[in-house]
Image 1: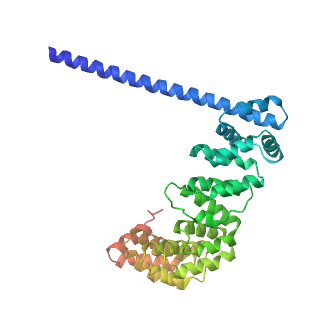
Image 2: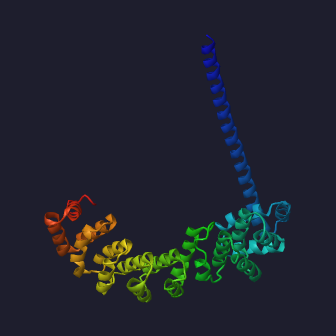
Amino acid sequence: MQGVMGIWWGALALVAASVLWMLQLILTRRLREAAERRQAGEQRKLQGALLGLAAGEPEARTTLVSTTRTVHIAAALVRLQQVVKGRELERVGEALREAGVEERLQACARRGPRRDRLVCIEALCAFPAEDVKADLLEISREPDPGISLAALRALRTMGHPVSLADLARDAYKPGGRTLDRLDLAGRIAEDEPEQAYAYILDPQVSDVVRIRLIDCVAESRRSSALAPMVALARSEEKPAVRAAAVRGLGKFGYCNAEDILADALASPHWEVRAEAASAAPLCRASSQVSRLGELLDDDVWIVRYNAGRALLRMATAGRRKLAELAEHGDVRPRRVASFLLSGQAG
């Protein structure tokens, strides 16, 4: 009997603990939602005050001055910049400068909690003055890659020239927002392609940045980008960078790439072979049909697949080679060729 009662008491304890846990979750969620509503209300109030300050409303200045946390003003200003542009935003910036808010944002951007600094740096885009740009340039040289990138992005938004060297530096440093850094590098490459070419050819620049820049200039299909692309596809020592350059030649549809592709298809590095196989039909490299057929027996599956897909896209000669391998090839080539000719590959 005592054993049964113990089980019952244990079950009741578990039920009570579960109920208390659920109540705690519900209460936590309610408190968080209330805090979010309160914060959203404060943000709307501050955004209204920012616009009111530009319109000369005296109570708006009082609202901003009484806001103790500068980061709250910065967050409201960042949101405002998403909807207010041109002369109206300039008036907001001028009014904030007169009210001393700009100095508070600059001070917050220079020191303080990291999250607050990031928000204040972004907010400073509303003040394209030379002293603000000088501050951001100094901040961009800090060792923290996230802070450095935020400052570079702000400078870029303000129309200040941003060097690719700054973006390439420490692109893989722990703590850095590599994807954001690469996105910004891509934007610069699109706007200033001539500047990008030198960094594409520079082995001291990090590989990940070079590959991003290669992809960007290849997408642009500017004739001036072809020379550095050909140079890298011929002789680049780093396999990932060379593979990106070969991929770029395919995007260009470069028809004089027969010798480059022949060498790349024989590369000891699988990523170079795979990209060369994909580029072959785009570059109309019909002389490489035999070599592509040999790659259907490659040890790396993506090389086999890309070579088969290339043959499929190379009209009569390519399909004839696939049909030959499907009937008389060794096990792996026969399997890949039969699969592709059956249409199952899509």
